[in-house]
Structure formats: C-alpha cells, structure tokens
Image (spheres, rainbow, N blue to C red):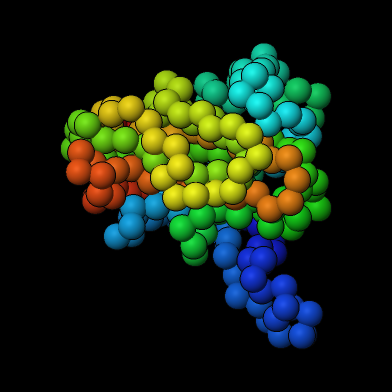
Length: 220
C-alpha cells in the first residue's frame, strides 16, 4: 500500500510550525532494487501497522513476539498493501524507503493515525547477496526493545527502554546465501520516539558491500 503522506522527521517540527514545507525521511518504496550505501544500512522495509502491547523486559518482549497470534507473520513474505490477521486485528503492510540510516517508526505510526506508544511493529526486508558470504554479522540499533531473525533463525535480542545506537546489538557470525535472504524484526516501543537501524558487517567489522534490497524478488 503506497503511503499517501510523507513521514516527517522530528527535527522538522520547527519548520512545520513556521508554515514551511519540512524535509522528508520516509516515502513509499520505489519499484525495483535498492543497493545499500557505503555505510551499509538497509533503507527499504515492509512495515506492519502498529499493534498495541506493553512491556520492554526480555521476558515480556519474548512472550509478545512469540505469541501464537503472530506465528503466521514469521512464515510468509508479505507484499505491499497486503492485509493480514494479527491477533484480533486486521492490519496492512506498507513498503517504505528511508532517506536516513534509520527507519522512523514514530512518524510511520503517526501518519497512519495509529498509537506511537506501547506498540509492536513488525518489519521485513529481503537482502540479496551477490555470492555466498560467510563470517558476516547483523548489527542493529532500536528504540526501544527489538528481536531479529535472519532466514528464520533468531540472531539478536536487545531489551529495555533504550535509544537507537548504531551497532548496539550484533549477532554472532553467520552466513548469507547467494540471492535472497529474509530479515525480520519486531520492535517494541514504550513511549516517545521509536526507530531502528540495521546493516551487515564483515569479518573486519566493516559494512558489507554489494548487497541489494529487493522486496519483490525472492528468487535464489
């Protein structure tokens, strides 16, 4: 589903109040593939509309994301505009691009007229590797807690009321296969701002080059 409105960065609020057109941070995803930039951040995602939840501890977050009501979200690769059942709610997936290194979920939720506090947002992207890549690590940051999966395997969990810090959570060394690799995340926010960032690092802790994000192309 194409988002009709552009999401506004928090730093633009003063500009907005002054009656000027503020800069944008998120837009509806453009067609085709999006190569990662020199810093390696993944800047195209499918985001599910927010789900009301509470609790930021590891126990609470793990119980939330592994609730049977969300089991179907872990199996299928969603499409832009697709509506799915999440518990009792029917929610839509939105494909977005971010101009920044991070994905601003506060603005995503606010633009849709949804709650921005005490929410769970599911995120999915498909990263294409030019060849088999070993000894890479997923490195993430989130506000607040989050859990991450690579090709169906849980690889990172960070918890508590925290700010987004680049490479705050780093997975063990893992492999990306040639072709599509599915990255999933569940971000839980307590209150205030909420966002996340993600990239892959190589064996020298440098951003992995040559990766491409393409949400529609899942061919090996």
